[in-house]
Amino acid sequence: MSDHPTMAEQGMKTRRRVLGNAHVDRAEANKTAADAPFQALITDAAWGHVWSRDTISLRERSMLTIALLAGLGNDHELAMHIRATANTGATQDDVMEALLHVAIYAGVPRANHAIKIAKDTYATMTSGEETK
Image 1 (cartoon, helix red, strand yellow):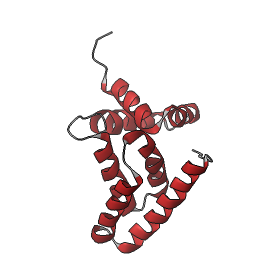
Image 2 (cartoon, helix red, strand yellow; image 1 turned 180 degrees about the vertical axis):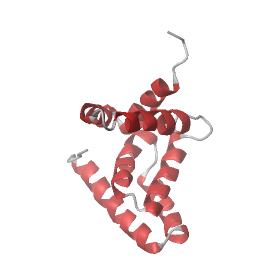
Image 3 (tube, rainbow, N blue to C red; image 1 turned 30 degrees about the vertical axis):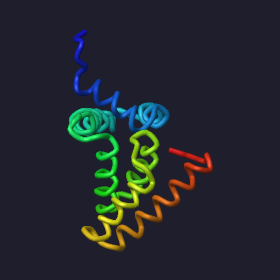
Image 4 (cartoon, helix red, strand yellow; image 1 turned 45 degrees about the horizontal axis):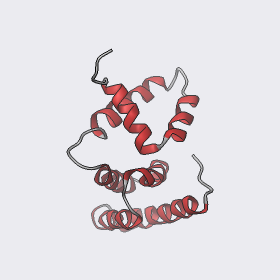
């Protein structure tokens, strides 16, 4: 085996670092033949090619991702990435700053809804009632 990980290996390492082993283990355990190609794609492309780059920090990448997900209304993924801030270094203040940008550039209703999701997610994280 090479000393250099494949993009898929690097992607899985980064995915685990950002989302946590418990989340990734659940996703892997729930993987079927039907969604295995999709799981391979996101591990390689999103986590290997994009999230593993060293041009910006995980904190910055996290904030960008949260803003994009909020702006597009991807609520489930938004909550997941807010939970991931525990691993990326993005603070609650960072997230709220990103969501202010969402209000201006993607619309107040999207930002308002995203702020509610963020508040609920942080409350769950603080209370220790975290779920997948």
